[in-house]
Length: 196
Image (cartoon, rainbow, N blue to C red):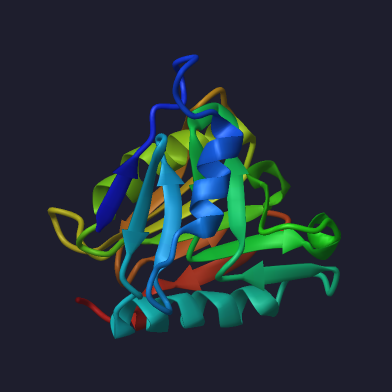
C-alpha cells in the first residue's frame, strides 16, 4: 500500500475538496483501489482470488433478498468527510436512487450495509478506521469478514451505530452462520468461504 499524506486541517494545507480532487487525479494501475483513509490517500493492489470469491458468495446471497431498487456495488466510492475518509468498500448495498447524482462518490450514510473483506495489508484499517467512519456516517450494518484475524478467520456483524461506535451484533468463525437482520433477514453461510 502506498500513501500520499495531505495536511487538510491547517489553513495553509489542503481541505477536503482538495483531498477529493487529488483522489480523482491519482493515476493508479488498473484494478487498484484508491481511498482516503484518515486524510491519507492510499493505493491498494487488486484483491486476491480468495477475497473475490468471498465477495461473490456474499453478493449472490444478498441479491436473493434485496429489493430491485437497491444495488450491490464493488467499486462505489462512499465518503465520510467528517472522518477524513473516502472508501471503496468491497460490497455496498445502496438504494439506486442515491447514485442519481453525477460524480464518483456518495455520502456513506446512503448505504444500508457495507461489507469489508480484509486483505493482509489492510486488515487494521478494516478493523478500526473504517468501522468508526461508517458508524459516524450512520451506516446501519457493517459486516467485517476477517480472514487474517489473529485467532483464525472470523466474521463480525456490527449495527446500531451511535456516534462513531457500533454495537456488536454477532461474531463467529468461518463455518458459523451469521444472521443479517432486517431489512435483509438472511443467514450467511460462512462455511463456504475459502481460508487464506
